[in-house]
Image (tube, rainbow over all chains, first blue to last red; front, side):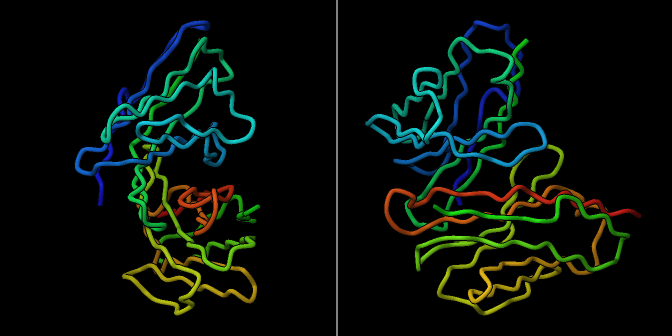
Amino acid sequence: GAVVSQHPSWVICKSGTSVKIECRSLDFQATTMFWYRQFPKQSLMLMATSNEGSKATYEQGVEKDKFLINHASLTLSTLTVTSAHPEDSSFYICSVWTGVADEQYFGPGTRLTVT
Amino acid sequence: AQKVTQAQTEISVVEKEDVTLDCVYETRDTTYYLFWYKQPPSGELVFLIRRNSFDEQNEISGRYSWNFQKSTSSFNFTITASQVVDSAVYFCALSEFGGTSYGKLTFGQGTILTVHP
């Protein structure tokens, strides 16, 4: 399966600043990656689908201007949380999708804390 | 729209007990995939098992087994002879095969499993 890394693994930022999270597919060229968000003690919710070379598609209720996704290459997708607020504090997890329905590989996650 | 329900919020067992985690799903697709993931305190999701909608054969893989029943839309997961290292949050998930949902996972609420020594 695909090996996926995320950077940073955790980040603390001040309210109003922007934070960029990287998701890298180390051994697979991924045209599609997914971004999920998990609030403390809750389930994972899909935020958006990152498509290489095209615009990301966002799930209902997710602000696309706040969560900027750039999938500039087949191995890298970035999620930028703009003007972060404490309510954006969460665990962000990316996944690489191989294109086959049952093959999705997750990164280790990034824990964001906004103070 | 698809939905996954894990009615058990928390389960506590003593080591070596068997434990079954329940999962009920809803989908309009005839083709879909079901998964179980484990999330230890580190946060990283660990893939456990998957099953597609055309294969209701139940199997055993080591200490893990699952019971997939389309008639009741259930996909239950059993850990035999539980160990302390099995303590984690377990998620059931669904992926539909068709349309715009292809590849996207819908997760259940999760079940916190605590195995006591």
